[in-house]
Length: 209
Image (cartoon, rainbow, N blue to C red; front, top):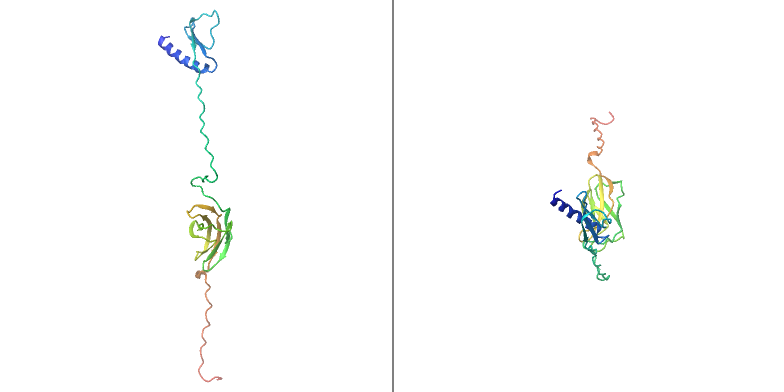
C-alpha cells in the first residue's frame, strides 16, 4: 500500500478513534502489525511480547463540554402593568341567536316585511357594539339594537345570521344560521271575479197585455 494512502487512512482512523475514546480514556496506542503492514489503533497497549513495530502512545485531549443555552426568565409584571397581547380581542358575550323567525318555518306576509328578533347573552349590547344582520350571506343592516326590521323581501326561502361586532369591526360572537320561507300574495294567482248577469230585454206596450 502506498505511504501517502496509509497516512491518510491513519489520520482518518485516528480522528474517529479519538472521538470515540475521548470520554472513556485519555491515552491511545498506535502500532504497525508486521505480518500485514497495517496500522493498528487501540485504547490499550498490545500484549507483552506481541510482535509490533513503531509502537506509539498518543495523549488525547480532554473533550470540551459546552453547557446548554438557557434563556433568562422574563420578569414578572404586576397586574397593573400587564397588557393584553397585541391583536387580542375580549369576548364579552357568551352567545347570540335568532329568536324570530323560527328556524325552518313559513311566514305569510303580503308586504314582505319581517321583524327579526335577536337573543343575546348577556342580554344587552355594550356601548359602541352593534349587530350585523346577514340575509342570504350578505350584510343587510348594522344596528345597535336587537330588533331589526327587513322590508319588501322577496318570496321564497331565506337564510339569516346575526354577528355582534365591536366599534373596530372585530367579530365578537356569531349566531347559527336560521332558514325561513316567506309567502306573499301574487296577482298571478288572483281568482277572476264571477261575470255579471246579462241584462234582460224590455217588452214594449202597457203592462198586463
